[in-house]
Image (cartoon, rainbow, N blue to C red; front, side, top):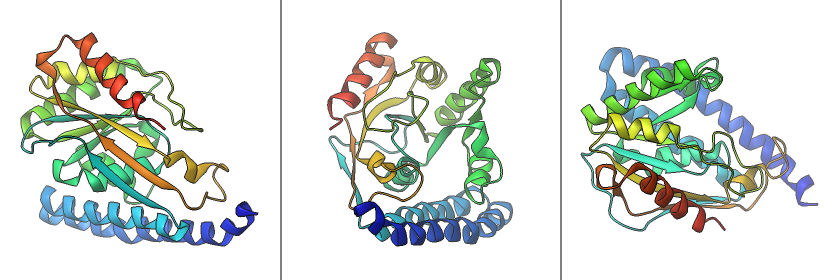
Length: 243
């Protein structure tokens, strides 16, 4: 019954999603080409807010719980589990003060209005998961970027989204390279809960009444830990709070 009820609201949600990315695309291009990074950043923040508001059409909500203060003006690596498309706009909006960038699969860098342009021009890197020789220098570039500019990067070490909320295998390669080339970075584990429920029926219709919650755990200075210890602590913090 709920699945049937969700159909008209899902149609509205899809309409709003595509409307927003279409409207914001020319604004993104104009702001970046004419006014540069900071103007483009404000436009992308507004895009994240607009895309996140789509969940209200599904009677859903999202919030974040900061377990400890996270300083600004330092390179930060946010490491999170991955449950759905809404992880991206949720983290992009709630973590906007830290200028988050993404390590994203190369397919998202093409043919998606607003999103592809931002990934290509907003400081993110696109990696081909089938070609490690391409991925390694891209991750190196990202580490050097956040180290130089004191910005942040969001990485999902599971590689693919969980369809039922249960965590998958966390790969350490991406985080290891980022820590190597951003030695002053803080590593912040982030637990994402209930985002997968929006897609509980697949791509259509959406699930209704989902309560997405992010938990940002205490930051850890990368240089204070042997990498294996840092990685184990990060994964444990994420997984222990998955409900």
